[in-house]
Every structure is written in structure tokens, then in C-alpha cells.
Image 1 (cartoon, rainbow, N blue to C red):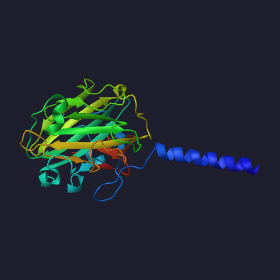
Image 2: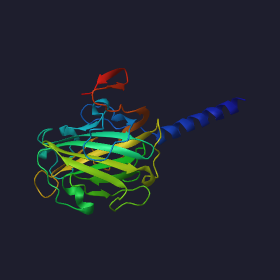
Image 3: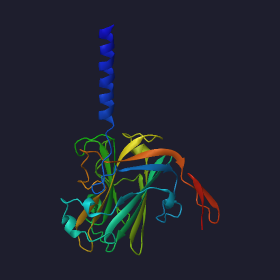
Image 4: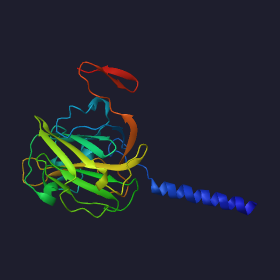
Length: 265
């Protein structure tokens, strides 16, 4: 009986250890030390680069706006970063039964998109990584897409083996603004076969942007974790898929939100 009890406890400990390995903690903000975690509400926006059907006030973005998030190993590193008006971004995420949606609201006082194809990272460009929640060696367990204000796009890393090409399944529409640009994107789950998009699930998420200022090549790269874009060795940030819907915009009417209502003008 005693041996059976000890064997049960050993198996339980082993199971807990395996679970701990399978789902590591999210990365922490390089300046504040806070865990990088955002909830993702359900919603199906139109991909038009306008964001008027995104209720941004009710969504939590991944924010990249501090010097500590500039990756020192890319181009000029922190020396090239002046302030948030020069280079910063907010990354919003929604999901539905078929797609994951991303809206990137960027501040960039000088735009330069002089690269094409797989080289778009070497100018003004957004890169987004989706991954398992494991802390693993770089490149092992993630997808990597890039897109820019000229609607150029590329898929580098791909867990299904379909990378190194322009992803026809990724929809992108961008708008240049007075302070930078907006990129709106939809990615079909049918082309992200190695990840599980379900309510309650956590997923690795690492938004990144590259900034060339007015030059021909990238001068800095800013990442959510402050680490190299592919560096999953300490995990990425996490997104957690919620069953809660994003409030629907209806001008002049009340939109329901958790804990209250808000009049939409």
C-alpha cells in the first residue's frame, strides 16, 4: 500500500512537471517587470485600414514605446530612438471562428519602405510572431509574418513548413496618418495549423516593428520583450482568447461593456 501511494505521488509530480514545461510563464516587460499578457475579445472587423469598427477603448493593446524595448543588436540600437513620437506602436488583437485579426497603430514621423519580398524587414515594417507558450530555442516553435504601410507582406518562419513566401492568405490594408500609419490584418486559422485557437487558450505573441526613418535600411527594431525578435528562449508575451465579444459600435447608442455602459458619439 505504501509503495502504491509513493508511486502515485511520483506520477503526480511527473505530470505537474510536464505541464509546467508545456506552458511556461509569459515574458516580462523589460522596464516595468510586469507580465506581458493581454486578453483577446471576439470580433470580426472589416479589413480596410480604418479601424472604425474596432472599439479600441475596450481593448488592451501590446504597447511598444520605451527605450528598454529597443533591441540593442539591430542596426543602431537604442541610439537611433528619440521618443515615442519618433517610433512607437500599439498592437490590438481580435478573433472569431475563422481568423485572428490585428490592428497596429504606429507613430513614425518618417516613413521609408524601400525593400520588397523577404527583405521588407530592413525598412519600415511590422513583424508579428505567434507561437506555442513554451520557452524554447529561437526559431523552433513560432510563425513570423511581416507587413508594411505599402501593404507588402511576407511569411518567414512557419511551423507547418510553408514559410519563405508571400502569404496569399494574409489580408492587409494600411492607412498613412498624420503621425505614422495603421496596418490592419487578418490571418486564417486554416493556414496556422500548428496552433490551437480556442476560448480560454493562451498563445505566444510577440509584436515587433522596424524603423528606417528616412533612410534606405532599418535603423532600429523595437520588440515587446526588448529581446531579439525570434528569441523565444524566455518565452514571448501571451494572448488569451476570451469568449467575450467586443462591444458593437453604434453611433448615438449605448455600448455594453464589462461593468458599465458607454455612450458612443
